[in-house]
Image (tube, rainbow, N blue to C red; front, side):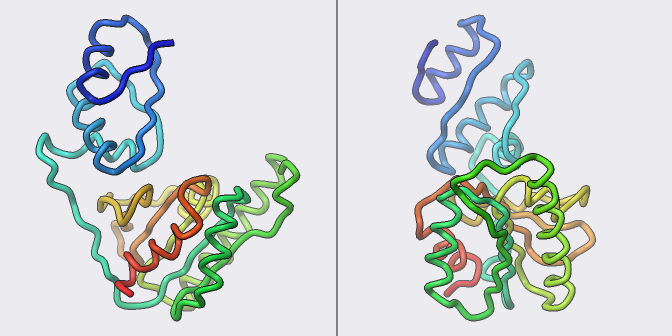
Length: 205
C-alpha cells in the first residue's frame, strides 16, 4: 500500500503508479476543494463519495465557490437517523442548548446493537414521514439531515442544486422548485459541539 500526502504527491502517484484504486482522507474543506481541483484534471479517474466530495469536482481552478444563503430567517428542522455515537453526542449537546426555533426529529434505538437492513429502512421511512410533516407544518427556513440513509429517505429523487458548504462536512443545497435550504452531513463526523456550531452558522446566532 502506497501512502502519499498532499495534492502534488497525489498527482504524481495518479500519473505514475499504475494502481487503479485510491482512498483519500481529507480533514478540511480547503483540502477537499484542492483534491477536487486536482481530480478534475484527471479524466480517467472515477470519483465515488459523498455529495460534498462529488461537488468539489465542480469548483473552478480558482477557489470561487457558490455561497449558501446563510444566515437564514426562520426556523430549522433537524432530522437524524444515525445511531452513531458521534451523532448521538451532537444531539445531546444540541438539546442541552435549547436553541429557539430548532426542532429535532431523531430515531430511537440501542447504539450497542446492530440494526438490520430491513429495520434501518423502516426507521428511515418513518423519519422521512415525520420530516415531511414538520416541513409542511412549520415551513422552516432550513432542513438539516444527519446520516446518509436518512437523507436518501427524506429527499428521495428530488433534484437539488449545490450551494457549497455551511461548515466542515455540511453540504448545502436547495430544491429546484423551492423550499428550505437543505444541509446534509454524515452521522459519524465531527466533535460533540458540531451540530451547535452548524446551527450558529445556519441561523447566525
